[in-house]
Length: 185
Image (cartoon, helix red, strand yellow):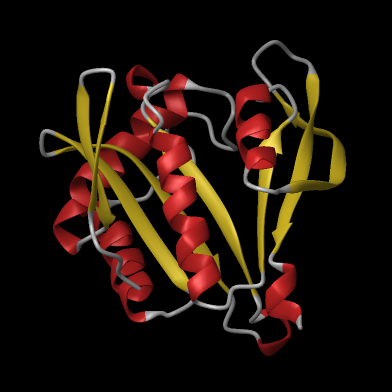
C-alpha cells in the first residue's frame, strides 16, 4: 500500500518519509548491508541474509499491491537513510495483525526519523483496520523500547538468551505488541 509523502525538519535536517518505489531497490540493498554492520540491535551481522536489489524490487512490488503491507523510506537529499515495513499476513487467522520492523543509518539517529516512521505506520495501521502490530527488540535497545511504549506497545513476552552478540554474551529479545482495542469491538 502507498501513503502520501510527508516532510520533516528537525535540528537543521530536512527529510521526507514516503512509500518505497521500485527505483529505491538498489539503494535499499546498500543501506541494509551498511546498517547491519553498524549495530547489533538487528538480527543480522553484516552480509548475512543479504537482499539484492532484485529482492527489494519484489518486496516493494508486493507491498505496494497489498493492503496489509506498508514499506516506507526516509530520504535526506535524495538519499535513503532509513526504512520501515509493516508486513501483514495472508492467512485468515492472522489477517488482523502485522509485524513492524525498522532500520536507520547510525549517522541519522536522534533526528526523530524512527519516531516519525513509527507514527506514520501506526496511523496507516489504524486506518486500515490492522488490530495488532507486533515487533521484536533487543533488551539493551532501551531507546527503542521507550519509543515503542510511547506508542502504546506493551511487553508480551521475553525470549531468554535469544541472541549472542560480539561480546560472547547472550541477550534477551523482547516481544512487544500494540493492540487497537476499539477495532476489536
